[in-house]
Length: 317
Ligand code: NAD
Image (cartoon, rainbow, N blue to C red; front, side, top):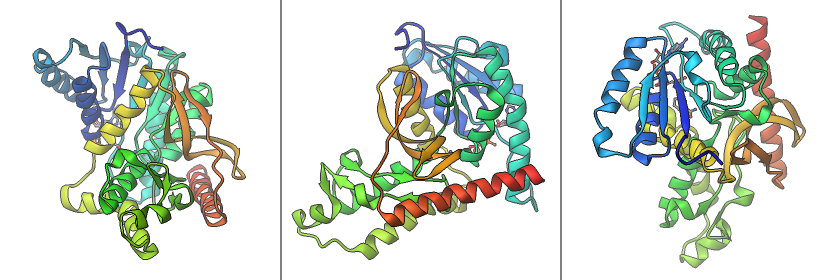
């Protein structure tokens, strides 16, 4: 477990996602030191000043801007750095630019902090987690993508609202790609340990599969809906990143859906994507083997194939 008095976190990319995470980290009082790194050094310094001016309202914390060398000794380095899409640019062009940025950032982080954990949020998060694993030289357990942590949270919120219970009492996962090919695991969805189909009658409700299908579409397309209205999403993923960092710093061994290297799970290997994992001080400590139904299983494989095909296009480009 990280020493309670010295919990160091570094953040690369102090844009909307990165600074939302940092703000949540500060309010939660989890870390004793936070290093802010950005190619736009003025942005990192500006965020540092703004955070520091709130320190009289939170727990003490040493917040400073820095360089990759300053990542040394971090328990976790969160990477939310990325280029944004230029007009006329394809998703693949954007991926190529972000992959190039990661090939430059990640080796510097790993060199400065070879024993720490890297947590990636930048999209496409599964591909960039896989690229980072390759260029970091770190063990797979130490290179984590935020994966479907956010999608799972959206799923739990919407199910909780539908059934009138706290989202934290809902156990349900979104697995696979963080993106259009993600899969809802209906076969294991439960509320307070009661399977959804059985929970509905307890609430004098019918279980209506078409309602559930519509609810999943809301989960899958949530980012599009938010981006249409406010340009980008950042608060909820900031909290999702906080939850993963909290599990690592506290060695909580919390089960969460994050992106990690598959080694044969459901017939998939050689790609990072999300399944429920046990997350603790050593990063991804276990990947849970779910007993998926045939539709979920084939959906998971198709999601992995889609990601592999994108990776091949990247390599060919
Ligand atoms: P943003 O444009 O606000 O911030 C990006 C930051 O990265 C900027 O401060 C920029 O200066 C910095 N940066 C760019 N190149 C860099 C480099 N080479 N080295 C260091 N810093 C660099 O973007 P944002 O809204 O914060 O989003 C960041 C990423 O997070 C995007 O890829 C976005 O798609 C992704 N995202 C992921 C999830 C998720 O669930 N994983 C959710 C929302 C957003």
